View 1 (tube, rainbow, N blue to C red):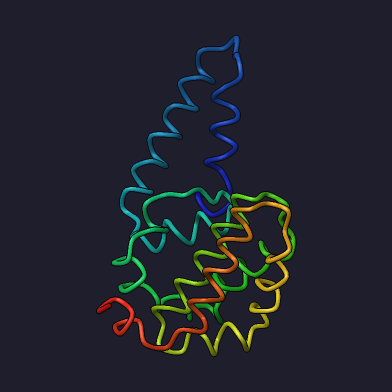
View 2 (cartoon, helix red, strand yellow):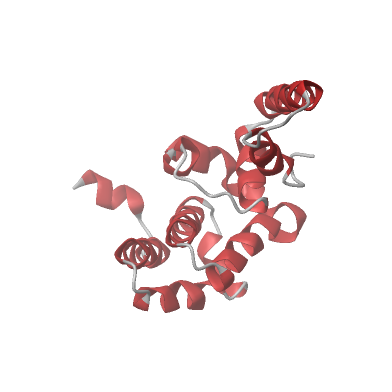
Length: 162
């Protein structure tokens, strides 16, 4: 249900005015049950759900270096399905927040996965990040540039020592 976008639908329905209190009560029970299930999910499961439902927001998981260190290898699951969804966002979305986050996350993947740069190149994602360098939104351009920089730098330890 979570992956099917029920959270978004429940939020939408909860904001409507209902004449029947039973409907309101049922929506609250469903929301509580889903909240408990989400709490049980791992941070990567939450991240994957966020990408699958196309509800990207600058949540702490995107900025957490620990998340990327711990989960970079999980992006290989299901034939790189999460990477392919991020790539699809780059290709189809016009939302600057979604584009910025997708660029940022792909850059972090390239930074923390041992073969991240090679995988991104093989999936044809790098070209779409380069295309976003001409996006009219400044934040999208900035995140695309940072992602490309992360794909080009080989020794992060050397940079942080300076």
